[in-house]
Image 1 (cartoon, one colour):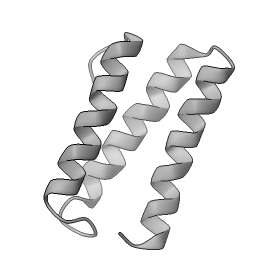
Image 2 (tube, rainbow, N blue to C red):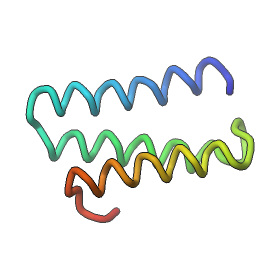
Image 3 (spheres, rainbow, N blue to C red):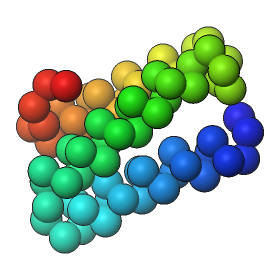
Image 4 (spheres, one colour):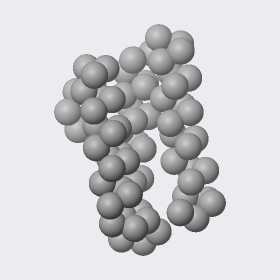
Amino acid sequence: MPRGTERSLLAKLGAAQGNLDAEDLEAACGSLGAYINEVHAQMDHRLDRQHPIDLINDATVIRQLLGCEAS
């Protein structure tokens, strides 16, 4: 994965963690949604096939566990 893409995705995950630490569930759900959207956008450009599917599935499970609304 290119370094810039990795940094951007990690920043979104870090934001979600910070939101959870601050007990801001809505913002955490939004950050995870933004992460999923970016992974989707990079699927055919900078990421191999299986890796993005795994990343999206993991983030989706976390969103479900947190009770985030479907997006």
